[in-house]
Length: 287
Image 1 (cartoon, rainbow, N blue to C red):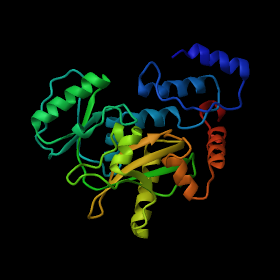
Image 2 (cartoon, rainbow, N blue to C red):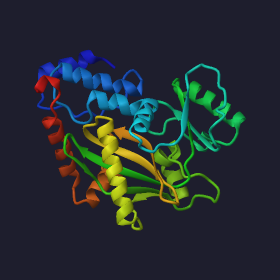
Image 3 (spheres, helix red, strand yellow):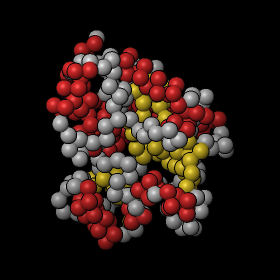
């Protein structure tokens, strides 16, 4: 939480590139864009997404507005500003999904994030206010399969194999959402049969449609480096974009790296690709 330390390290070590794994600054998730901006002000190459892409993607409300402008399908939504009166929407259909407008890593998400009436909505929005100290994003819940698509590139964009979130032991009637427990609680993952893998039953047409859509999102949000797109596909084949995630988790064995492995990209080679993209990115000071 001190840019002075970063400045000293850059001046002392003069690195060829900085590997950006920052998730927050002063406890604020969206401040990572400012650190990337600081690196550009210091004329320091770095990995991952540029400041503009970080800003547009991490502000989930702004992101969805941009997607709507480009006619990219995303669930119908509304936003409640922190501390304001919570008036249930009249033109949205329950169940609704309530989450932070800016936090990531499923922070604040649980089974209670799905609400079925006005009373539950007010309670959950207030929870988001209290727990995350951010605005609350409320969107219509989309019933369907959840897919993740890794994207790499600056000007030339490539996608990794489509990945699917599965919960093989989920009780009947429960919603398949990626809560904090689903993402980070190993015992819960085992209990619910949580796993991710490449789907084998997607048609070539659907796969191609998903890939084209993810590339459109990447370009619409001015992303560079690498990202992961989260989508839902309904039973009748409609695709909805849930979120665009710049600089997703790169840990060995996690979704992004596993998807790359299926594409024939070993972990070390994936890291080298990300480093090369950072070195080849051309911000204003390098043009």
